[in-house]
Image (cartoon, rainbow, N blue to C red; front, side, top):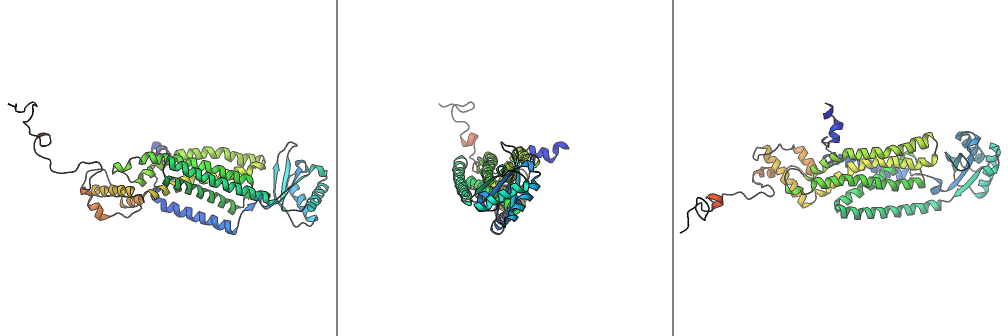
Length: 398
C-alpha cells in the first residue's frame, strides 16, 4: 500500500494532479491576491526604513542592559528634547568593538541629534563618545530605488531574449508573467504585514528573481520534451502533455525549493531570531517569502498560462480537435482504441466546449500520417499481374 501512496506517485510523476485543467481557479486566486496587494500598496503603503524615508540612528553598547532598556532610554531622551519623534526600529548588531544596539528614529536636525545623543549618554551613565549617531537622507534611498528598477527592467529584458531563443515567445511571456506575479505577491506580503523595507529587501527581491526563473525553466524544459512532435499523434492535447510535465517535475521543484528554503530559514529564524543578528533579518525575510511564493507561481501560474497561450495557436487548436474527435469515436466504439476522457476533462484540456457534431465525424477523420483509405487494385502486390516478370511462379517470356 505504501508503494501506491501519494508521495510515491508524486516521485514517479504518476499523481495525475489536474493543475493545467484547473487554470481558471489558479488564475482567479492569483488575480484576487494581486488585487489585494495592489490595494495594500495604494492604501497602506510600505514601512520604509530610514534609508528610504530619511532619519537618524543611534548605536549604544550592549553593556547598558537589554534591548528594551536601551529603547526606553532613547525614547525618554527624545521626549526630553521635545522632538515629537520616537524609536522606529531597534535591533542588536555586532561590530569590531563588540555587540551594540542600533535604534532608528525619524528625521532629526543636527542640533536635535546632538542634544539627544548627550541626553542618552547622561541617562545611561556612559561617555558620549561611546554612542555613535548617523543621519541618512531620503535622497540616498531614492537613488537606490531608481537603480533597482533599472536593474529589474534589464533583467526582465535579458530573460525575455534568453527564453525566446531557448524555447519560444509564449514561454517567455508566461515566465515573465510568473516573475511579475511573484514580485507583486512578495511586495504585497511586506505591505500587509508591515515588514520594514531596507536596501537588503531590494537586494533580496532581485535575488529571488533568479531562483524563480530557474524553477520555471525546469518545468518548461519538461513541457518542451513532452510536447515535441505532439501534432504527429492523436493521443494527447497540448494541455494534457503540459499537465503531465508539471506532475513529472513537481517533486523536483518541491525538493529544490525545500533545499533552498532550509538555509534561508536558518538564516532568518536562527541567525536573526535566536542569535540576534539583526542585519540578517531583512535579507533572510524577503528571500524566505519570495522563494516560497516563487515555487507556487512557477507551478500554478507559468505552465497553465503557457497552455492557455498555446491553445490560441491554429496548429494546436486543430490538433486538440483531432484528439477530441478521435476520443468521441472511441467512446462510441466506431474506432478501436483506448478509453476516452470524460467531456469535462476534454473541455479542461482545450478550454473549449466539446462539439458533438465534430465527434460524429470521428470515424471519417484519418489519423495523422495514415494512408488514404480506398479500394486497392486487385492482383498480387497492389495490382501487378501475378504471372508477369521473371519472378518464381510467373510465366516465362518467349
